[in-house]
Image (cartoon, rainbow, N blue to C red; front, top):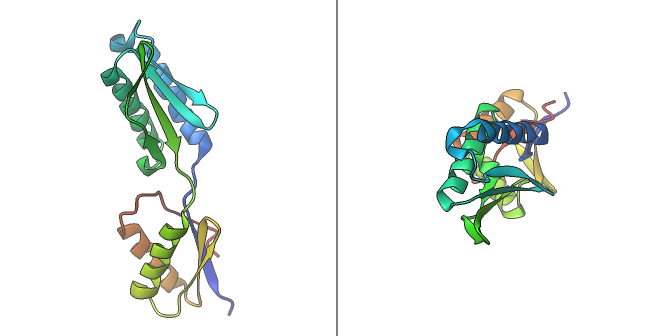
Length: 162
């Protein structure tokens, strides 16, 4: 029988993030406490730019955006926001979306699987993702459970389950 496998990845669903951003922008336009404050959230290339007339308002906009991401089943670990900074009369926050698993994080996950996972499971680092293979599907499910239990600083998804 051929080996079964799956990939451990950290990918962003851009459509869901875009929908969350649109919902947050719509809420800002409707909420009384943001009326007339110049508060806005928008794409700026691959980054998300938040601007308001005060630091606390900019932080509140970020919280609204995070709530919308949660409702769309997106991990908050993809969000990397700067501290509010003054830019003229405005306060701005730049949000970067983290995607992919770094080499050292991939090594950590691989070591965890080799040390604590079932025997006979192989792990290969392939760019910014990991391929996990085994002869038994039950072992792969055990590895998925093991990886889900860990609290990494990046979002984890499992794809290409064969």
